[in-house]
Length: 108
Image (tube, rainbow, N blue to C red; front, side):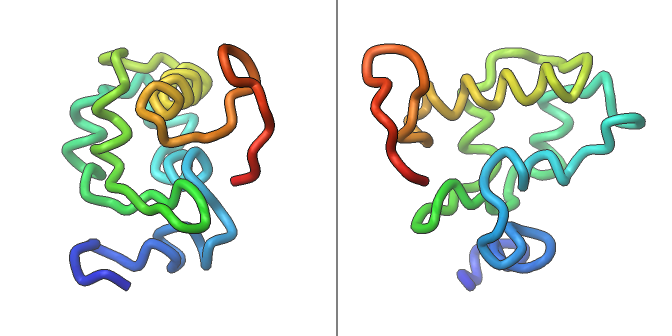
């Protein structure tokens, strides 16, 4: 574990021993019934330093992903998922893009 992270990226607070990646790790930080609407900046202020495992070799802070999230507030968890997915594509965090210029399949 890097001493720079507030917790082990692969521990129970992170990706659960590399079993969960990106969106699954981010979704664990919210309660679908109680946290929405959700303010992006408040969410990043609270969780921005938390490690997010993007794939088997890459871990980035949540704030790095949210630099590409344009929406300031999310009405539902589905809205959040869509915005974070678009941000991860735009930021180059994902190699696989099911649509667009390069739709070839690459494994996480």
